[in-house]
Length: 341
Image 1 (cartoon, rainbow, N blue to C red):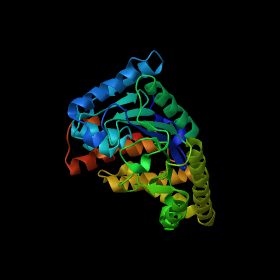
Image 2 (cartoon, rainbow, N blue to C red):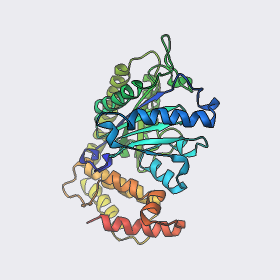
Image 3 (cartoon, rainbow, N blue to C red):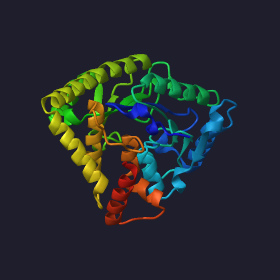
Image 4 (cartoon, one colour):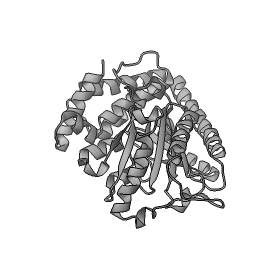
């Protein structure tokens, strides 16, 4: 089964669209007051609502008890955007239900009892919302959510009260970053209740010029209003990035193509490659692809997939062993050489 990040739809400024719904069960205390015994009972309630379902979804999910995983296994799931860094660090009983193509993951006992996450490749936020909404309805057939007629869905953090919805785009913004205009973008869109975070969300840094653009407000707006507002803001960001890329390409086509092929040369022939350098060089290839460069180096997988697969934990899982930083740099360079044609 192909993963969402293997799709050709990831080749563009908008890499992916994501919708996340925060929910809590009425009969249990919130996360910070939840006993380990009740945490396990809550997991079983939600797990059974999916795995025992007579719908097609029940056959497409597997349950992973996150507490039992090794450090590399947990971190690799973060690198693939299956779970959040918060769930990885949890000391309570916790787990995740994962769809076979990793487009849907249901995190259990993160900050809230349930975090439903749906990811669609490329610019397709409506599809992501539709998937998350279907899973939400399926779970609610078996359990009762903590809900207030006045405030909406009740959550551990007040910023999620209301719809409990966070919608986001993963975006590749190299020219906005290079020119420093990304700072102006962040300041401007904050007025519309939209924020910009790093590649793994809140508290993370951007790597390879990849950012997450998401809503901040969940209370007082409907799901549709939140998504439509995000769409409008994202369209403006995409337009600005495209304008900058077009201007750069038209003004200095040879310089752009020189940077593209120099990046390819280093990636194709280096014997050691640190993660930060590799991400920047792959980002250069992604920008060339987005600009529509006439000649593009060939890669046997999508460039965002390549970015994911060269992260530390994913490499060590793939290699079947722990590695020192120096060994990782050698393995990363070898892996990239194999993927580039």
